[in-house]
Picture 1 (cartoon, rainbow, N blue to C red):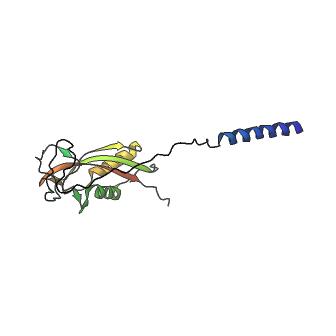
Picture 2 (picture 1 turned 45 degrees about the vertical axis):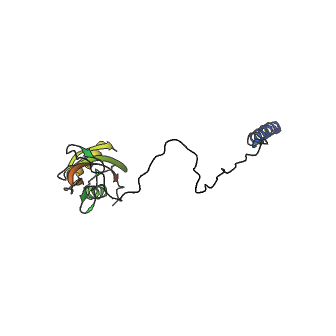
Picture 3 (picture 1 turned 180 degrees about the vertical axis):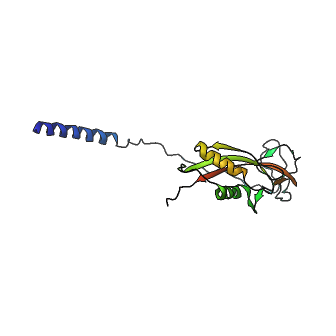
Amino acid sequence: MNRKYAYCASLLVALVGSTAMAQTPPKKRASKPVVVRPPVTKKLTSGEQGPDYGTQIECPGPGPLRNEFPAQPVDPNQVYVHVEHMPTLNGQEGARASVAAIHRRLVVPPAAPVGRVYVSFEVDKEGRVRHPQILKGLRADVDSAVLATMRQLPRFVPGRRGGQPVAVSFTVPVTIPVKKQP
């Protein structure tokens, strides 16, 4: 019995000794100090010119500040991701309002898993929800419930670009909540 303890103790000492050796930090080598000198600058007097660095570029002064996109032609068939005036629903920004409207109308099947469903859709020029599709789903029955809810959303105020209504695409996460036990 003493032999077993002696053997285990020797293994333990060897193990502790090897890990202690492996965990010691490496010795630092002496290195030369690095000297960083600030650049030498010379103030120019009124008659001197600075060094010639090649072609000089003239920069126009700051123009008037505007909070609008540059005027570009509006393509009526293009679906935009971001426009000057994003679509709204009930006076709220489109993505946030659509998630709230989906949660109010969503009826998930019993024993639905908890998680998120990512759904993409377009708001067309008339404000209708078009082409809803699941980008990342949980389960087929939950995904179909989310799509059915998307089709029931009310009309949005359409997005505008250049003063004209345009189609805008959204991708929103729909959180499937935990069911409360009665």
